[in-house]
Amino acid sequence: MKKPQVSLGLVNPKSPDNVGSVLRAAANYGVDKVFYTGDRYPRAIERKARMVDMSRKVSKDVLLAQKECLSEVVTDNMKIVCVEFALNAIPLPEYEHPENALYIFGPEDGSIDQAIIDQADDVVYVPTVGCMNLSASVNVLLYDRLAKTGNYEASNQLIRDNRDTNNRLKINR
Image (cartoon, rainbow, N blue to C red; front, side, top):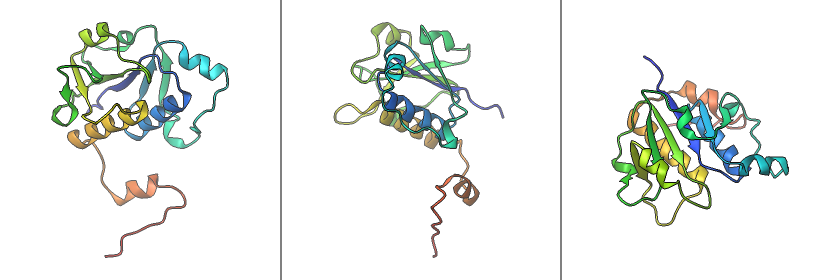
């Protein structure tokens, strides 16, 4: 079975902390690529802004790349899915994820441009009271995808291989 193509697109992110957390989420959920637009994130890195420690093994294989336009990375069989509080968007609990997708998220302090929304195959939103943090939104969307597609391993070996080195918990029932 061919692995689904799943990428994340971040519109002009500003916070290295958020981008670092998005990279970790991407690795946790098997996303191979994270793309971003704009120059705020590189400027923040240049200013040596506080960085999330990404030294854990999970995020080292995730590609992070700047693009002029996120549509550059869309392949023929990939759907564009925007995640945004937009009128007439689909509530995430009701959404059926495509096999191959580029999920686009807006900036921490703004929205996805209308032109990108107009190009999207789908627009979904997380039905919360108030908007969520960028990295929290990414985690919720990717968990929803994982839960609905059933594309995961459930085993004690997975737990052993991925838990913190100090975690030796076991249910004794």
